[in-house]
Length: 144
Image (cartoon, rainbow, N blue to C red; front, side):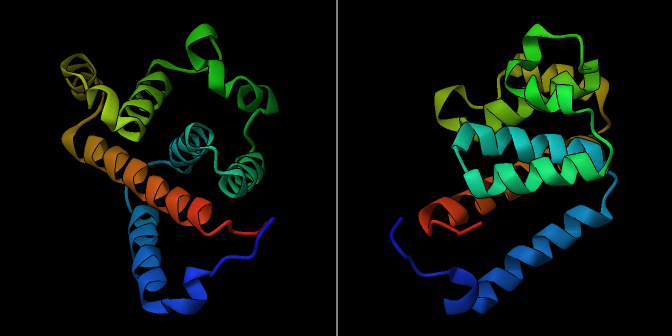
């Protein structure tokens, strides 16, 4: 694999800004389990090996059932995920693939029937944050 620049070394202030966003996410109401599901699913969609590895390890450290991680890309077809988690995964997919249909009215309305506005906003910010991290890691071939 070719060697590429690492933004943390070349533009440390940009990386610091990303970490400030990540720190904001850690201070919010979004549970660590929910945030790790978001991180892992978005990373799967984006094909970010660095982040898939990192967030699989983090999920396991939090006590996540390995079977759920193995079934994450087939979440619609299993009973291993709660209604809340399925909604979070649906939002993760729609925001990550925003170019397809955006967030549909159905998903938006259903999400707001499950989550309050603050939790919903934090879900969106969590999805945005991991998508930014994925794009940094993929474009720079971030080494493991």
